[in-house]
Length: 231
Ligand SMILES: O=C(O)CCC(=O)C(=O)O
Ligand SMILES: [Fe+2]
Image (cartoon, rainbow, N blue to C red; front, side, top):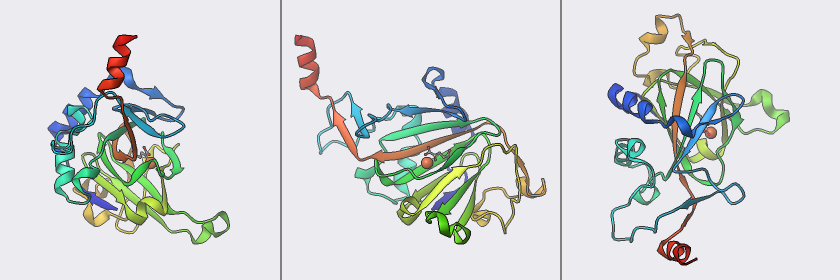
């Protein structure tokens, strides 16, 4: 995992939050979410796009809306952690009210093994654990990753394939936020925020943007549209 504080500015954070469409939310019992450019088809995990693929000579275009892709995608590309051809083509936006979370899970094989998470609005602790069978849970490795607003967390390699991640629910105040309890303590942008509160952080609404590269993409190209007009 790579943690980079202040990956976006406060203005960019505000602008992105402002442009999240209010009519795209899917409300779940413990959070709400929306997918851009669209949800994957459920059986085949395919991203179906209305446009033709751009010719291979053209600069890689993103199916993500501009308010999500700029400035995040070029800044991600500049980290050189994945080739340009692997630039994210999908973004899930999750919103958690205080006390809401997401159960431990892995993101799975529908995506190339990296996810870039940009956090907005409020800090949150991501609980990461090794994928051990049930009987070995005592020895399970666990890490707590503190995600500050405007930070980037990049999960790839074994962190993507060999761990589960989640956010505890029913918690209004995250505690134990110090050098011993937080894996990325030394990388935080502003530790003082947490030190001042004695290692506590009262949750407020937090929004995450999770950028990924979907493996299976189907383009509904020109011929499909022409057929549509003929019928
Ligand atoms: O909100 C987060 O940081 C985690 C979201 C997540 O795990 C997911 O969308 O798969
Ligand atoms: Fe996830």
